[in-house]
Length: 136
Image (cartoon, rainbow, N blue to C red; front, side):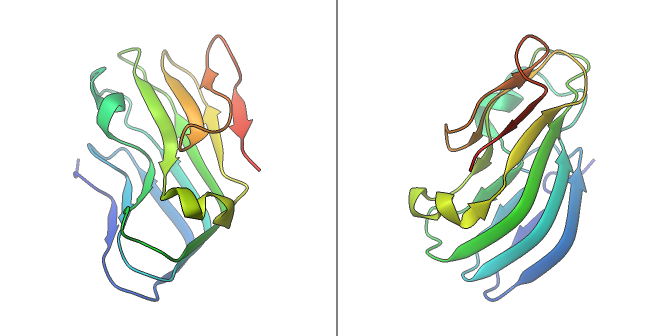
């Protein structure tokens, strides 16, 4: 396994149909300006320990980024081995939350929880709550 599936450091990068799965840290880390992502699908790793959720997210936009847009982005979970709790599927600067259109999190199976969709907003997904959560 790799640490991060995609690191974008350049400006004016556009992704169409991005898919990243099973990395050991953030799945995507975006630090370039004026990034655009049209459809993103991801799945957290199955077998990480419980401390994983304290540090990592599916899609992170660096705090220094001022301009970023995303449409139709999803973070899926199947924490098979441990009851991992991820704080948010997506972490972005507060001023960019509204520029993420239709972000969602999905429980596929397993023991874990994604507490919020984006930056502490949106419902949780777990085996005892929702199987699908989105924020609009």
